[in-house]
Image 1 (cartoon, rainbow, N blue to C red):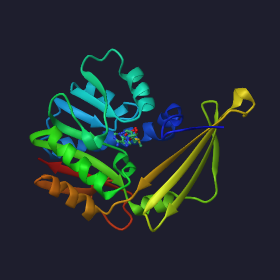
Image 2: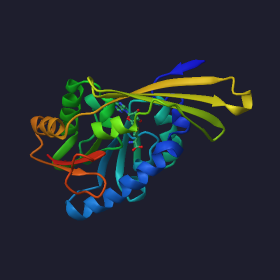
Image 3: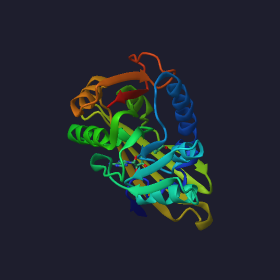
Image 4: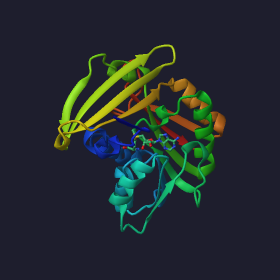
Length: 248
Ligand SMILES: C[S@@+](CC[C@H](N)C(=O)[O-])C[C@H]1O[C@@H](n2cnc3c(N)ncnc32)[C@H](O)[C@@H]1O
């Protein structure tokens, strides 16, 4: 059995497992937000870009894009997807310490990427880093899973299925005290008699809407709005994902 950092192996199945569905949802919200906010997409950053689905969409739409992630494995996938696009620059950077070549008009950070930061200090660092990476008047659009979503999503019984030649076992748990979900993914390859096993562990911490809004305001954002990512209405007790739009 081999172990890897988050997305070290699961980058191969990420799109089918999460990415394509999340991208479709993100894209619908993006188009709806563009009708409500004067967002300039001429130069954007897709921070924690993963396999590059959102970055490819933005590039296709005509934006100049910085596609940024900390995981070399996810960036390898993004590089394949974005190959040949002259309006995309791929950067390996940590979202807490971004140093983009130029400040952007709009910065996206999508699909629970903020939940991967496990300490409140990390969120504060990321908020400051997003603020510094934007031009005055620029927009930040980011989201975060709620405690409700992470708690409900946790299941003591392992979930087993096959995907693209892999047998996937997905184990998840929730720790109320640290508000953190732990997800164990193991992948076994059919063509090797299921003998080759790869494992990785992901952790996602939930933060309240008020903490996240406070961190953004503290970083300097002047207008911070929070919505339910499903439908863009007011968030409530059963909101699964919060969507933030903030203006520098
Ligand atoms: C659930 S994936 C989301 C990927 C993509 N945004 C999407 O919508 O499909 C979370 C991503 O966050 C990245 N990530 C986690 N911590 C990070 C950090 N500190 N800085 C930059 N990226 C990070 C991971 O490598 C992973 O690609």
